[in-house]
Length: 471
Image (cartoon, rainbow, N blue to C red; front, side):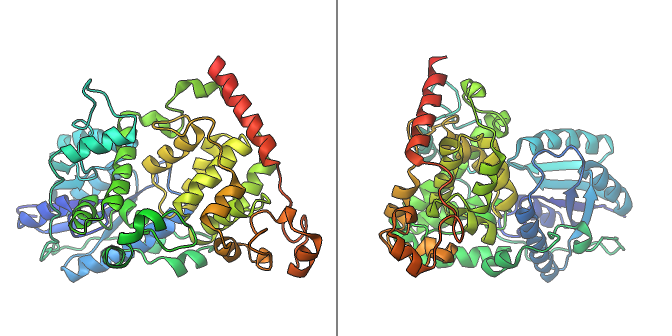
């Protein structure tokens, strides 16, 4: 094709607004070929889980619709990205490939090789580091090392020049006047089989348009109370933008500037926690599978498949924990308070390896994010950056009584306990027999008895952590 065309490789940036690669492609005046490649190479580490695949499918539907409004459409491929994109460039006459770099370590390594591969093939390449608000190379301690504690990191970010302003969406995207084959989205096989996404579909609507509507609604109605309301899982007090942000339906730059304009300081701080996680993964990519604190490689974890199964399915006998796990399975999402409580129960009450929980969350969360997932699990287990001290063991009963005092959250996800009084909703094993009978609850039958005694488990965990510290 005379003059060639520009291929835009979409990855975790499924949006038209504030998309530097797409903006550049539109500015060239050449035809623009938007492409998404599902990487099905066998050696993909941390391949997407089932819930994330569902979100990705729906997000690609939305992206294609947005592109068509601008005059283009989304071309799909699967397989090895390098091979697929090179073949497509040859097929269409593309002389330039552009993309926004990802946050994941394997993505950066792949990018470096792909740049060399494309240039050897005579294809021009341009890449934008738009996944970060601040460059990981710039935000460092006075000694030039990465920050391992959040508050100094947060202060360093605030002292930096503000992140760039978000870019507008291109007004028009001229599509090449050639025939380009593309499989249907269904052929990529992203939707789970058998279909378990009913609850997820009922709660979420992926896509860029929805992301901006959700942000507008949050800033207008809930941001003012975010500092306190975000702690209570029974209240819709968070933004619920995490999946939209992970898939790049809205950019961190757009969130940053909108939050600053709204003076939503506490929300801005939480956004910077995401940035902190991203920087940690940039500097310590091995932490997806290994503890940042190497002494934890010797930690005496248990192996108990029955306990792990009870935790996954929300049948531990601790209502607050079980409610969190059932919410996760039903909706593909879990409140942040519950992520901490359920993670603490797995790693400290059950003494099961944090990587088992990280893998389960990765498979079941629509907002499964490698950096956030790694930081969160290592924080609770005590083996990561800015980690909770080893002696901090969340009490699942007291956590429930503090953050779900009327039991509304528990009753929503554990309807078999709906008739138990507020006094005993978080400790039904202490309820009088008459109350349980009246509520239709038979412990060990209609609802499980606790699989462990928390105080004994706490002592066992502290002993295990103490022994590690003596080594």
